[in-house]
Image 1 (spheres, rainbow, N blue to C red):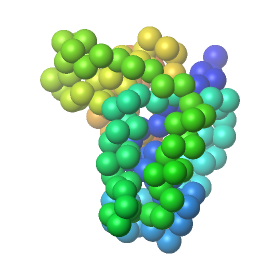
Image 2: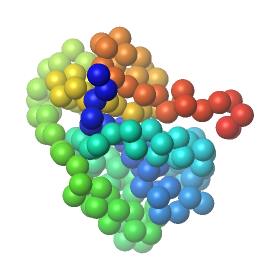
Image 3: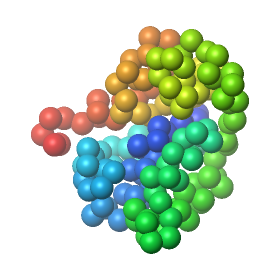
Image 4: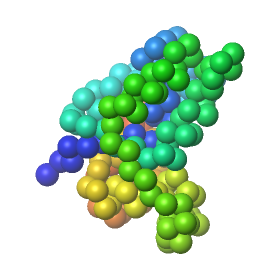
Length: 155
């Protein structure tokens, strides 16, 4: 059974927001490792889900990467993130509990929280982080690695 809800990891959420506003920014600052094809693949993948879930950790990191005022990565990025937040379920996982988990020392705060939430809420995670993806797969948590959706000719 496929999860109806998806959680998008930080860098891919940044790609989604920036690419939705200005595709010419893909491949540049903070998005150097992504192509327009990655953006298309991400959109195709997230269309399979009826709802989005996120964590304050992911949203804070994404907001920091987007910047604000004169330091914006893309014009309208903060408003686009606000609109995204308005249409998702946000799950809070206290950092004190995450830091006590077995995942914390290996993955850090955000990825450890992703593992805990994805397991407990039957979420599908989309990431391009190979260690995170591998661990989620080992735990039988539904996950997609964006890199697996591309072919070498896409780069």
